[in-house]
Length: 267
Image (cartoon, rainbow, N blue to C red; front, side):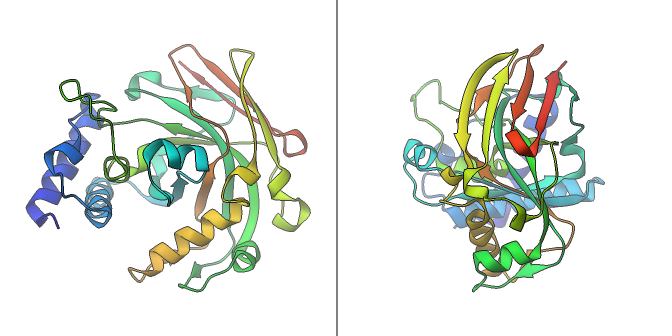
């Protein structure tokens, strides 16, 4: 286990990396014995630092929910991060590209909760009953930690990603809000284009066979520390496309069919 000083230092370095847009070295190289619990402790310390600076927690994100992404990192479980108020950007609006380092886009469904949700025995039906509506979303990813160490060529590990707030940097909500019982979420699809050229397509069933199962996983993980989700929380349930690189000048448009569209432009 990392010491409290080591956790605090790592959180401070991540915060400086974000502010200066300068990536830091792999934490997994600096601390080879670092555990997933250590990584979440760093994430919590960083989020607490942001809250002290005036930010407000608005929800959570779930990542690494698809088999393809899990296999790429050599893991078999998802990860999660925290959504803050300054991460939300308007549908069809501009996103300041200069705020980020190595930006990517993913398409997913966001759950907006009507009531609190907690407990180690929560089920998919509990999640659906607690959901006010689901809505199309684009997640903006960034990495404050190097993807590849230039000297050793070591790549990021799951502990690096978790500490880095699960690579979350922003969110765009759009489309048509839908009650969960009004759609078969497994068959929700997205056609994602960058600058009018289709880059990725996918079905929401790629997220643990049903997007609500990502929320189940998150609630059970939060329950281990006595926490849970709150009414009004926005929860990104996990991407069902591969991440797409986003550059200054790029416009992204995701067509969710009956659920409408969501888009943004990196200015």
